[in-house]
Length: 268
Image 1 (cartoon, rainbow, N blue to C red):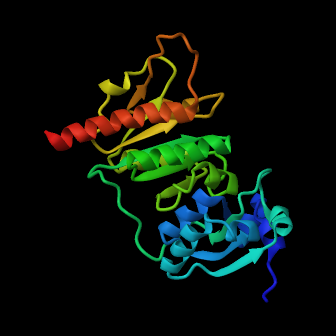
Image 2 (cartoon, helix red, strand yellow; image 1 turned 90 degrees about the vertical axis):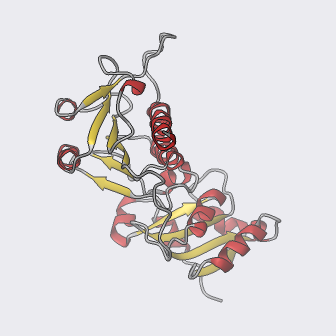
């Protein structure tokens, strides 16, 4: 029986080790099923004996059979799985993948003719990063960008927070947000920034054409040098008097206004 490379798996919860190896971990049933169902290129799958003996394993067995190359599948006892896991309550299954992700079959394209881009700038919380990806996936975004000092979207925590929706998405990482935004503008994309006040309401903005919605850091918002060169600011009205919204909640409100406008265009 091949020895389980548990030390390698454990090391991938460290960013430096991920960058050095080009590998990351997707942990938990939604994340692993997301990788399998999009035919992501995988190195290995590790499952606990407890999960492998349960009814939950049937769905994974079927997905593994359909996947052209899921890599080696290891079944381990619960104590060893817990040593590898990055969560306090292990869910019994994980997979190791190379990143940026590649696929055995092309991912489904965006449903929109016009580009719909979501860009987070200096987003620090893995939960917000993952939820932003999940919301963008639901909205049919063509790209999801993480700019500046944003948390690594390919980290196990971010992948888990995305509930597996990161797979099949066009994820772009760029440490220079000013240049990244300039490139978008030069390519003809309308760039709009979320601002606490002074912007137009989302339904007043044109979100039906090629556009990018920029969302800033959880505490500081967007950098001034980015906002000053943008086409338009977006302000979400809050008549209840709340000072601010979570970045993931703000993205959901704006993206669903984009959906409304685009569906209206399709039906007109």
